[in-house]
Image 1: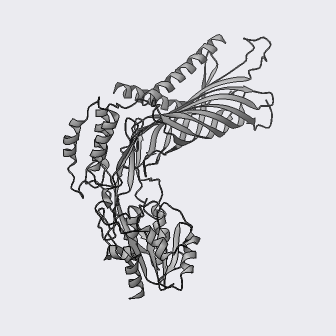
Image 2: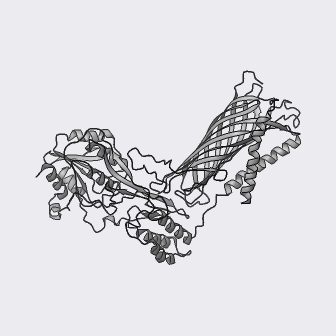
Image 3: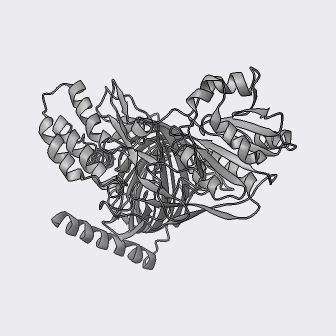
Length: 286
Length: 339
């Protein structure tokens, strides 16, 4: 209970920040204002705990890609869709060699205002609203008859925070370029309200026997506030910007979902490590 | 600069810790002693199996009987056999259990019933050693070419619309058609509709279905009606469907669907039933079980889980069988030809 109250207090406080940021816009944009199209190749570490057809937690590896548009001037805009797929196996159960294939897609968009720089470190702080839509599909090919398929989907609207810091390696290595062409950033999107869809009680849709029946059943939806649909996402990135404005980046994204549906609640996490190529879309190179 | 680096390092460390602890919060193996596995299996069936009421099974008494037989130090084989006996209480061909070393399935739905099928009679008497096969269908013209005969051995065997259209065209001059689904244990329900849609000119309600919707034995969804739409060329002559006790699951569904259509007569023995679509669950020790999680009904709301009765009940005559005659096929020919 105390945990929940602390979480609530933190989130209520955090929700005030975008309002403050909106009413106190900062004019001095980042030196490295940019507009990038981002292509990412990624490896993912996934873990899923569900109930519809198994009581076993599954973990495994996957690979994927993402496409994003990011613009940072006075404000920060990011629209991104990432996809990953792979295989899961029962956690810590070597005698059971079952493989569950998974597909995971995550779309998110955020529009953030820049708040006062955090002195004396010179860290830029952005905050604003964010939205995400994610779905995961899993196919379990062991002897489970019509319970092969499980899935979960969620959509959330919440607050997004981003910290960014530009720096140069010149202070470490004197031969390095004195320009601040490196950037490290950390962000979080925490949905405050959300809705989720999980399988029906036995996992079979009511229209399964129809000639045009589907394996998906959208009837079991749950909506909630804060602690019912917990679906935060955090991401960190180290980026190197070249003279022409293009950039490379390594990044890590962690998505956690605890969808406390009345039927078949699901918990899952996806840790995705990626390597990105960022193409400069600004007319004037940096 | 150094301070920034330190802060950045701390932030990343916190990030990794958060992600690690979130992962750990649910990546825990469930308790998997033999007693735990037994309790999980009993409870899952208690909350999700469909036919306790229909079959008048006292599942609580099953727990009373089997729970004392489970000990954590019993062998895996003995444990598997005990769980198999417990699931057999359901008397359901869709129920069973799979371990890493063995598989147990209940097949008592055709025990103590006449076989009512002899494949050699098909090949020797009716196909005369020359069977044609189109897609999944073996077929031949019988009764001096007056009847088209089709044998479909499993609804798991796929076929195209063109395959079935070809067969209908091939026997279009015949007086009627026999579709034999004896010894057909089921498969894809969609294949039922792909055949049946040729035998109606109007949209027909052919099935009802209810799913388990909660843990109580009577908690089921309302009835969802399945409608069959006509499609492809229409066969407007008599059709006989042949069934026996080994006609099961999608085979039973086929029998129900066809009985709702005009010009169709089902002949033979009652099917084996299997009218709860099976679902499955993994047990805490990695074994799997499967069981019925739904209830399929006729459009009149009757569940023939114990077997779909034919329109004309008849068994194969053993004396005729000795003489190379399949009396169920002959009965169908009589119906089609009005003999």
